[in-house]
Image (cartoon, rainbow, N blue to C red; front, side, top):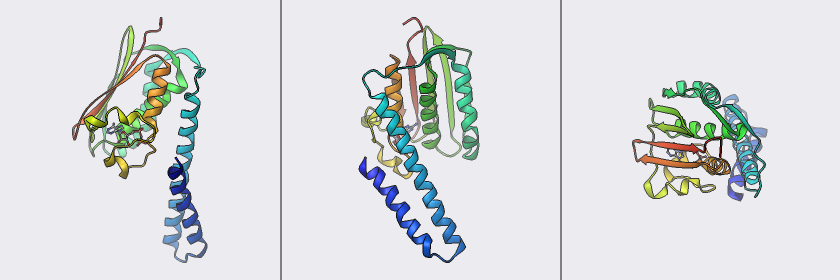
Length: 212
Ligand code: ADP
């Protein structure tokens, strides 16, 4: 953890120092952008770490209500549509109407984490698929045509701060999937991964039926 906080802080300090004396307009903007990026990174990291810490408490109080899962998924898609357009990712989805009894705010976190990963680790002009199925249980499947996850690392990606080596060129904290797993398990559900290296990955989230 300490390294994850230290390195952006060092960068911010270093570039703030440089800013004081820099002459050129271009460099000034470049340094300010580094500071902006590193601040964002710290802010993300802090937010995720705080969430994970509160979820780790033994009796996290879920705020459970009945709500429309299809609307929630479509809202998350709308939120990231521009990013997919930007990198030429095509999205197809099959999201029929479905209500669910769950903590709406926490589950939004789950879909956001999985969708942003599907975008981030995808190839250029790749595709993403989102499917919702409800037959007693509720299942959401998010698939991508990205890098895939090596078989022997599939269980580790849920560990705090764990990142597959190849992913380190991308911005990230290694906390997203730990949060996903923790939230789904608080709901009595399961997360499964199917993945093939170089081909893509499917995350399958199963949530128990409302009666449970
Ligand atoms: P982050 O994305 O911030 O690194 P996560 O906890 O969300 O952290 O994911 C952990 C690691 O799992 C990622 O660093 C990446 O190596 C791998 N991973 C997650 N989602 C995918 C995906 N859709 N395709 C390929 N690799 C993935």
